[in-house]
Amino acid sequence: MYSKEENQRLKREFWVAFSEKYPRKWVLYDTKIKDFSFKFYVDNKKAQVLIAIENRTDEKRKIYFEKLESLKTILEDDFIKDLVFEKDFTLENGKTISQIWVEKLGVSVSNRTHWNEIFDFFNEKMHALEIFYLEYGDYIRDLEMNT
Image (cartoon, rainbow, N blue to C red; front, side, top):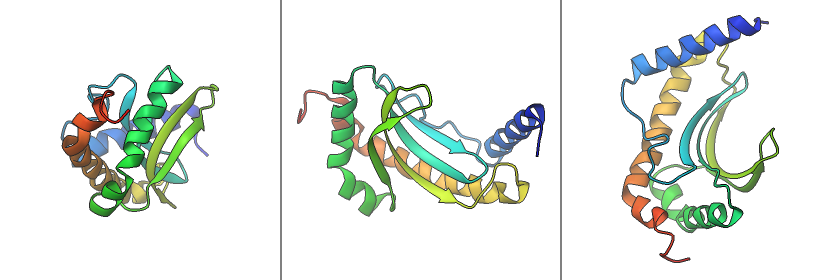
């Protein structure tokens, strides 16, 4: 077990090592949609790459989610398999968001021998989501289209 400070140091080292292995600018929060972002997540059981839709109004959040859901076949056939679509996910703080993610189980941020496997997973899956978003972003961003 690590202390809180050791965990923070280890996570900092993890993200620095990731940025050194894959030194590029990710889309992440630069989607041109408020509260719509791409995220990396890792803990001691899994790694995830996800799209988080955290709009303050349920109506907008659901519209964006349904737009992505309408592209599910294309997304899975051409970009990433095994995606999980969750329209209503409740965060620890009680806020409800929508998210779409893919995960890799059996890896741990605390185990340095897993880091390269996590880095490669992050790079492959996030790159695929970004390419998808570059191609379909105009449709996703346009709330007037098919709403």
